[in-house]
Length: 473
Ligand SMILES: Nc1nc2c(ncn2[C@@H]2O[C@H](COP(=O)(O)OP(=O)(O)OP(=O)(O)O)[C@@H](O)[C@H]2O)c(=O)[nH]1
Ligand SMILES: [Mg+2]
Image (cartoon, rainbow, N blue to C red):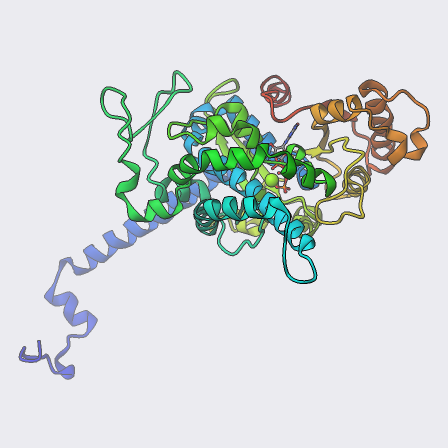
């Protein structure tokens, strides 16, 4: 380059001179300007179309305390109206379910360790037989816990919740799992049968397929879970372990993401989650996450529905504030070219989830009764002026849990003295609490709006009929 002759600065032609030299120059720059201008016009038009489309789209906000079932409602919705996407994610849920199972094991081992420490004699010995057994099982399960920990770090880096699978908003964690675990999906959309690349043309499993990628090996729980099956079973069935859990008031079966009773199916190389498994899988939501669904069944095909999911635990609630302040989409959901924020669609419908779990406390604050917390949140939402025009629909979710609790003989009046001697049955209990929610709704709503509620169980496919009715309207 340095050897090339350079034009001295004083010899650089002025624009008019250059024009003289190149007759096409102006013509070319005019063409260029027209092209750029057209591009801008097209961009603006596309933005406007996107904005119009967005304004026409149904926009739903899910609110409710942690574990009320908000994210489960989304899965339900997807299964009902966007089943193709649901199908594509089936194997992603396999990993989540495996991790849920590993988290349950981790919790049990931690509880047993505490027990173990409490049994150590002053001279440092521990004669209890549980300890020897525990040591062996804990050692044998350590590779599984290690792989689980690795996978959790990949899916939700820095989320630091030792007992929950957590994901960061906007992290595209499903794509991440698919990519990192090499889940190339080949889906038979006419059935729930999933074939992945591990199968050869004849449908036989190529069991070596997974182990080819060393990175995958470090975070895929499948092989080590399969290898640990007997030890897990032994641990979970051990009557002494059950006794410790009982003594410490830990009801594993009632915890979200409980899959230990399904170990036989899940700890299998060929495990493919059922719809019901996916509904029961637990991923804790952090922050606010927007889900866009392109309807491919049941409603107007090709129409768009936006559902905004929020983390419901107390530490996450400050992140709801944008919706309470101006009722518009928070800035981060708006593509940069949507300059006029006031044009953005406001939330049209709020689904508020309030399980009638009168006997449970918040996980994050054992001093606070869950139902009391739900009523407090409901009051805030009803009285909010910005949300006055949004349709409020109340879901008394987890009706199956309420039924089981009452059938187990748990008395409402023990937790809610004002319930008195009313019948301890699902109907009267639901009516009693429903009246409370209705009263707040009527008293606090800034403008009159109808009180709508449903008794739901988000782990079964309830949404199709219900949501279809609202969305068609
Ligand atoms: N038995 C039962 N379990 C449910 C029901 N709805 C949800 N679950 C389970 O409850 C757990 C928590 O549900 P999520 O949908 O993750 O709760 P969430 O409201 O999104 O919780 P955060 O993300 O923490 O705010 C999951 O394991 C679900 O499978 C229900 O109706 N019945
Ligand atoms: Mg959630």
